[in-house]
Amino acid sequence: MRTCKKCKITYDSLESFDIIKATQTHRYICQKCRLKYRQTRRENKMSSKDGFRDITIKSILSSCRYRAEIKNIPFNLTYEHLDSLLSESCPVLGLKYEIKHNSPNSASVDRINNNKGYIIGNVAIISRRANTLKKDADLAELRLIEKYIRENKESTSPALGSRRSD
Image 1 (cartoon, rainbow, N blue to C red):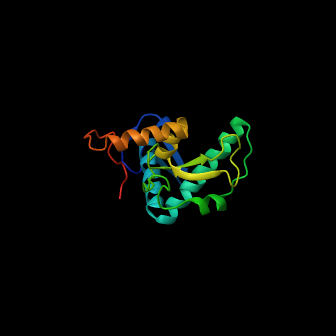
Image 2 (image 1 turned 135 degrees about the vertical axis):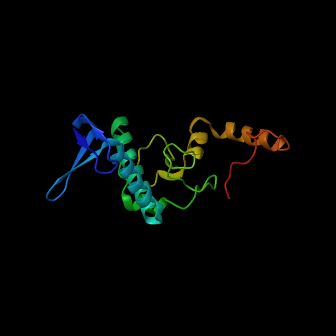
Image 3 (image 1 turned 90 degrees about the vertical axis):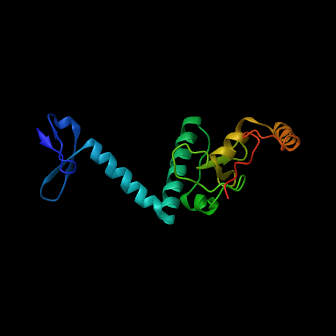
C-alpha cells in the first residue's frame, strides 16, 4: 500500500503510481495527480506567447515529419522556416489561433501543391477550419458556395453567418 504525496489517497497497488525519482528519495504520485500536474505545467507554458509559439511549431514539425514518412513524400521543413510562417491568426479566415486539440482555430499546415511534399516553399500555416474547407473542395465549388452565401446572406441560418472572431 502506498499513499500519494499530492492527494493523500492510499492505493492497494503500485500500478496506480508514477514513481518520480528525486535526488535522495522516491516520491510516489498517483497517475491522476501526475496527469493533472502535466496539464497544469503545459497550460502554464502555453499561457506565455513564446511558449504557445514554441509548442505549436514543434507539434506541427513533428506531425509533418511523421506524415511525410508514412506517405513516403519529401520533407525538408525546419523549425526556423515554420517560425517565419506562423502569424497571430489565420491568414485565410482571420481566426486567432487556439491551443485546444482538434479545435477548428488551431494552427494547421497546408500543402499548397499536394503533389509535392512537406518542403520549404510548398507549405503555409492556416487554421484547421480553413484547411478542412479547402481540403475537399476545388475552386469552382468554393465559388458556388460563396455565391450561395452572398445570395442568401439575409437568411437567419447560423450556417451562413460569419464565424470570424474579432
